[in-house]
Image (tube, rainbow, N blue to C red; front, side, top):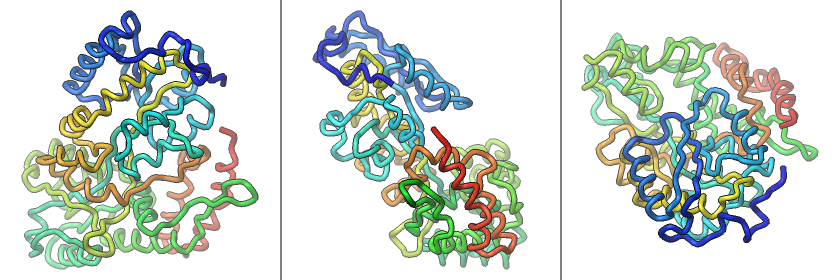
Length: 410
């Protein structure tokens, strides 16, 4: 790919911002369906157009097939200028040369971006995107069932959580927790908590590190959670949808995203007032469990001829005012810890926020995407362990498939 934007300073878009400084230009933004709350988008568009004199063309994209669509767009001569990209997908796009270097923007705007969120926006030591927002899992629980079991308050350590599940098992007819065998992103959080790496470099190539004993330790924790559940060992949290299982009112808890609690309440309004949230507790009080930080970054296409205008948009969209408004309206985790006060009054987001600092992602390498394609070999590993195979044997059985996927050309 030819990086037409990096050369510099005599392009149409290389102007200083000010009223009407970009008059007559149109900036194209691709954002995913559901990412931009209506009022937020309206306010950002108005501020951008007033400040720059340019127009903002906002195009909503669907998740289905988006990776190929973005890959194709970035290789063309007239790509969208600013693109929302999934945080775990950022390294793959950066590697192709499709994204502009935003190092100067990081210096101006991102001095206090949360490190765990910014990690995915950096590839090969360079800033190729800006962290926009994140979401992570919490414990969604049924207050009525917990009260019936005599549990007061919410657990602050993993052992206290297991004690609570014990009480539900002994004192109620409810399933203590719904934990299917392949809730892979919750397992990834346990791996993050154990500092367990899923890949390692060998002979200059990335290969599986699934056999690492630390991975086995994380899987033992998962296995204990699953022992309190009747959920299928060979299915994930979407088969069936765990929120719909929880909605029946016969489950003490599940680990999921904030919107899943809302889905359960919608499916069975009778349990709406019984739904509560708390941070997934870790080994010690005050240090939550590791969590997978799903979310999005904003990037500028390297092929865009409107680099400076695109950066003006990012400065507006990512300002403390607008980032805080996004968190408040969308219930998502903002890119700075100082802005988390905007989550007040949103119980699921308030429960998610404390885990963000110690959260993480899947391996930030371009080759990782192929590993998660169905059938995900890590899910196969998880089911094997839950069905009685040792960690070492289960890891060895899928190692070849993982290595094959890690060696696929991107």
